[in-house]
Amino acid sequence: MKHLRAAAAVMASGALLFTGAVTSAQAAPADAYHHPKGAPLKALAARDHLFFGTAVNMDALAEDSTYRRITAREFNSLTAENVMKWETLQPQRGVYDFTQGDALVDFARSHGQAVRGHTLLWHNQLPGWLTSGVADGSISKDELRQILREHVTTVAKHYKGKIYQWDVVNEVFEEDGSYRQSLWYQQLGPSYIADTFRWARQADPHAKLYVNDYNVEGVNAKSTAYYNLVKELRSQGVRVDGFGIQGHLSTMYGFPGDIPANLKRFADLGVESSFTEVDVRGEMPMDETKLDRQAAYFSGMLDACLNQRKCTSFTIWGFADQYSWVPGVFPGEGSANIYDENYAPKPSYWAVREELAEGRFN
Ligand code: G3I
Image 1 (cartoon, rainbow, N blue to C red):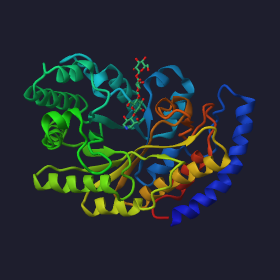
Image 2 (image 1 turned 45 degrees about the vertical axis):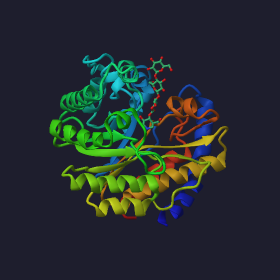
Image 3 (image 1 turned 120 degrees about the vertical axis):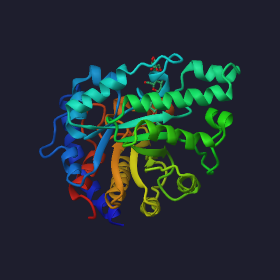
């Protein structure tokens, strides 16, 4: 229950500091970013051997110098928000385009940052040639399996040695724990998951290989499906190294209180865990109460990670509200990140900072 105490403390201090941030945002609306005194977040995290990351929007990285500065300064792990997905990497059949993914890896390398790979398999953001080929029957099941094998092998080999954790399969279960009726499942049956892990392992034996999903923070039907999948794959000789919890929460719903128990059961299996896409959205307009609640949710997830030795990375899904995916998908909702659209730190920023400063097992 420590995180609830921490959250309360954070709410108090965060609210105070946030008032200051609003003032500076009003004074300089174009860009209220000024780094608060003290170590960057990544330095606090590194003391505990925690990778503290962000998803990176490559357009923002190219065009927005403040975005670039914060990405370089605050994080020791980067995830491509979009550019390592199928539609970007293999826009035409057999034609790979690693330009943007490589640019992310180069940026990370030049700033001493690690890279999380996202994602070798998903049902979204697939290229048109693939989805239409499956739909019109011009790509047979056997061919699809070959296409999957070739993509996973090519991509994992291309980035071999440059990615410390790969989301190998993303979002493969429904909420009730049954297999998601994706193109992959419908065409290939459940064995595509073991296959994808085998091919990824062969191509890059040293990366930690993850399953990854949303709504799996606490113990529920979906997270239990992953728990059983990891055991099942192991009995087939297929090792899964990590359980990725996306962490897309909303202030409109309660906080899942059983995150520590969930992390523990995976740790007891010998599997590490990571928070991979954390953000906490709210119904707009946000007010102080919602912002404080948001801060408490960030704090609660990070606290759970810091109190589980096998929780190795904590990635937020972007840090600046103006680039968030949320308003595009949930109309009327937003403000999901730790900096506002003028780069003023929000209470959630201070909550994260305080948790990292407290460190593990506090
Ligand atoms: O690249 C095109 C661009 O050419 C076009 O002009 C523009 C017009 O809308 O769209 C651009 O594509 C967008 C793409 O992001 C790249 O910016 C898509 O419309 C947009 O739907 C897509 O959204 C991404 C979403 O995944 C797709 O499902 C979000 O940025 C990204 O944050 C989000 O990330 C996912 C994780 O991968 C998996 N977990 C859930 C998470 C949130 O949905």
